[in-house]
Length: 333
Image (cartoon, rainbow, N blue to C red):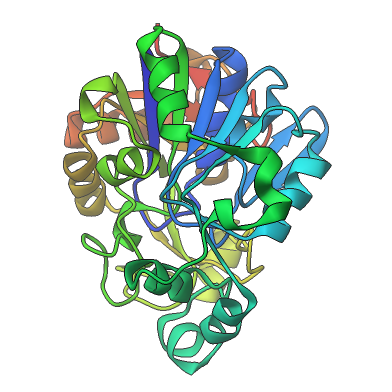
């Protein structure tokens, strides 16, 4: 059995999509299942000359042989889901759990109101109000919509069957540890827990089925929307250091701060990290760009990686050094 759970260690936007896509291709995984919140999270993957921006399907979609599932705990915007299935030719390998909650137009309108978008800084995609309806037991479910009937499955059963057969499975998280409703910077958080244990709960996978928990950190910290960000850099510093980024879903400029070891240490604890995937090392250290051999990294980049390992007491086994999926140093062996 090889079941990998991948979660974000900061405030989202850590590069989970790249890591998941790499593992899906490199390890030729049998299936990937998405947990987390809903289409308020976007994963961007650069592969084979194309750009894939995913809000509903797992980032493992880049491997045409990988089955793709969306767990019962995920909120589904039917338009977004069906558009992605069509765009990425996933008609015969994409499945939703019968019990996924549906985001309706009324949820999107409410989410774009003063409380959510203005005060909290949400993405305005309807996830918070839709989760509220789920808790109040009045939500529509995927099994209630005719347009989704061809994609319905008992996802919990399917992923447990895959795990029990000893086949490879990726469990994909969304957002980041400190956007967790319970463990994040409340009230500037998402509408549920997004730590590793919650992601497993979303897809119906018990903790004894998990072999590895990979926590993804970016080489610097970014955050979209409101909420605290320790040692936040000013706009001119971000520009000078080449750290300017925009959100995949909202297009909003990301706020930036240096790598936060205290937050990272807590994320390792909260998620029971087996190892770390570190992304965008090349942005912080441009001479590392495109390098795929750890021993060829510039000295300052290696020192940064080794400091992370020493201070967090967890190995860094995957290191992103460029935008393409295979711009990756793989130290798992």
